[in-house]
Length: 485
Image (cartoon, rainbow, N blue to C red; front, side, top):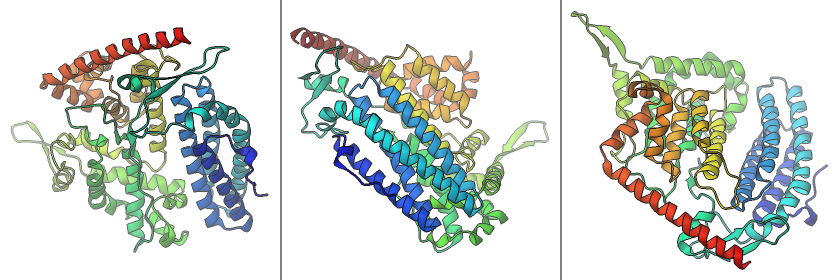
């Protein structure tokens, strides 16, 4: 039975109410397609619904964090539990080979989403709405230039909220971090050939990983160019390199060609393509991808005098040419050797959701940074060293330097993750520079470049002193407000 939207379901926060209405419509669409037996429509509705749920949870968590809600972490944990169950069922749906099994899984997923969503709206969100509505209704992210600098002091036990205006130069200390996250365009469809669809699907999967690191905080000034993975200028160049040097090997796959018989590839796009990739095909694509990159590696050769040299193949020279930055300021890319090829090889893995894992890891970095290094007045505090320890954990957890790139992204986005922080962080990776470079070569490359630019450390010291002075001024200001209240 379709869900009918009612005024009683509104929680009083316009953005979230709009999300809830859209979610109800997608649930009804999902149910209608499932009941009519339209498998294509069911898959599309499921994909759109799961995507909107993820966006909605993120939007809601941003609002809760922005107002310093004391139950933020409990609310986020409930989101994570729901999202984990949803993604597990959807993965089972995508790999199921029998239509009857897919139908049963889709019905289970529909029932779970209906129940959890209604409980989410009518209980948790209704309670949160009473707290969020006064703030969320008057602020936007990012704020309009004309919006007055203001902040809301969180509730002390058994007291009313205190509202006040801050001096403009202090307002940023009580607002949540404000930086931009690049987003991918909608997936393309209508390809002239199955091969063109495959190229789009693979390169889009890679772009989903790269875009995790494409963040910009205009208030943070870094004088060095970003490492290549962190730059949006690198992505189209890597896409061309994959298309010319790697995809020919993937397209030789017999399992991939057989896929044309079980899907309408002319109607597919770069995302829906993966709904037709089973475990065997995913494993085959991954193996071919790795072999194609291994074939680009430099070959060690022993000369007549016994010395060893590395021979560069023509295809590797082509790779170097394709990945060169458009300008020295666009991004920093070491001369490509076997270590860099290993890093590039790790950008694609159709057997796992690397992009989703990295997004979640970044959100954890964001939370820990705010709690430890830029804590807002009424925000839960993190212990000293919490961000450092999590970044070290991410380094051990993710192969292919992804923990390292998370660390470098934190340096680009978080004002107080300075090169001094990176220097101290690197001491956890080995006793010597050589040992540290073996663990995080791109981070150590950045630190070596910093040592040739003394103005970088000078700028960081000045910015840190300014931040500390503003914090002291804010604390004195808030003491005066509290006393007056």
